[in-house]
Image 1: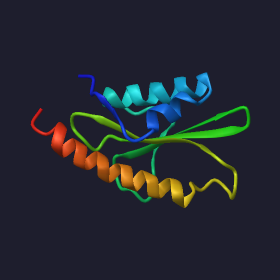
Image 2: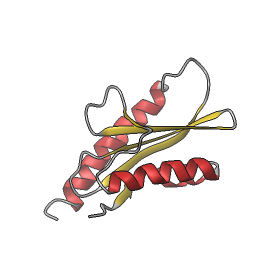
Image 3: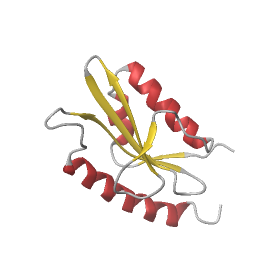
Image 4: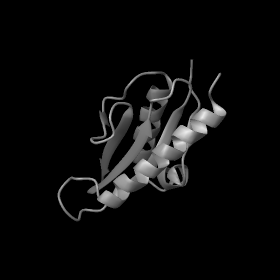
Length: 118
């Protein structure tokens, strides 16, 4: 069964601004999640427990990230998509992690209100 995708905040529009090859890789990773599988580039996002996944893609010297959750039985929620700005190391900036946290909480509410009982 193919789970539906729910896009939180501006995540869909943000991903659409990525270069085509990056969109393709991220889209395929999300599709694999819809099938209940994991893309080879998908890794757990540290600090969020199980089911919150990050896909990192590099293109022309830039790094792009998409974060989604597979915690919910009947839907995949894309929480955030952004270009990593090289400020310090490889760590995800705190403001990006804070946004993921807020959108994860919103996704939990949305799932509870919309998908429960399917």
